[in-house]
Image: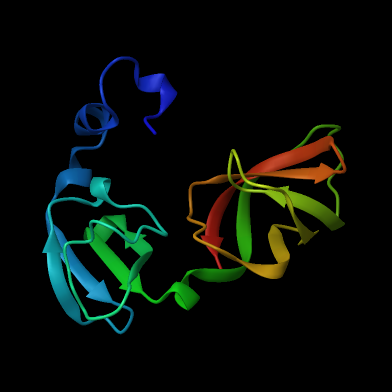
Length: 156
């Protein structure tokens, strides 16, 4: 799906204007750092992507990380997509009071909230979650009440 705020043009045109480095060619590497291919820009990839990687290694591979500053796409197995938690940035609470403990966390607009626990700037999931990337947002709930939200700074 295209992102809604770019208007009638496609997101690639928007990115070419605001982030031309996203179209800088670079390597596709496996999780051990071995180069297995090249790409025309990180704008064509997203964490969790399986199709259109431009490489064939004999078994299914997924984008597990994108290293923008190095224009590198890292691929690996489905198991390597799983994360136990995320570091948070720019945390906002709806009532202004910082909370600790159990929450339901939703990190996809159309995904279901999942059980988690928050401790400071670390959100730990009860069960490992897949295909989460830095830069995504996460919302915290208590039943159907929004408690707050944050940006995902990194995964663990």
